[in-house]
Length: 264
Image 1: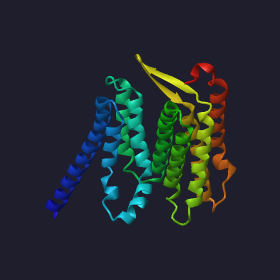
Image 2: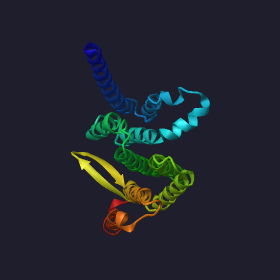
Image 3: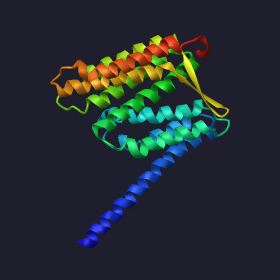
């Protein structure tokens, strides 16, 4: 019996180590392929191939699996796009930072299923998804693309939170939240402001859009948790601090950090 327990522990340890190695390899390989090829396409294909289990079932379950893994798709594809945006002429510090973020996501955050982990997973998807969309859509001069992609991000992130409550239908709520993100994307596309983050001689621009969407989603999460705890009623004392914090952040960003020098 003792030998059996030790064998199982050994297998579990080996499985954990293998899981970590494969996920770190995925993060490194997606960045390497993007930088070496000078294109985001190979990195995105690698992310999609890593989700092969989504389609390793009967076709009638594919759409359900895609929706269930939408947050993971958003984070993986967005980080590959950010690697591409950071430049592909040579490896730089931003590539390393983004790769580490992706590895942390794959190894530590994505496998967890607690309520707090689900919140962080959704916030990751909202911030990095909005980040990539804002820059890519602006570069392509395509507000429609930005609107559609932000709808998907808002839908996927809100669904990831709402699906934890299995006693109600969340279809309409996720659709409405997706529309809210789509409208926000349309407005901010026509008023695109970016901030520059510089490490050494390498700079990366951060648009206002991911900051705004993440702040709004933070308030949404607190409101939803309040409604769950109080039989569908949102109590102001539960959301007052998040609401004030997010409102002040947006006001400061708009009135004090939206001067012309930040325009793309």
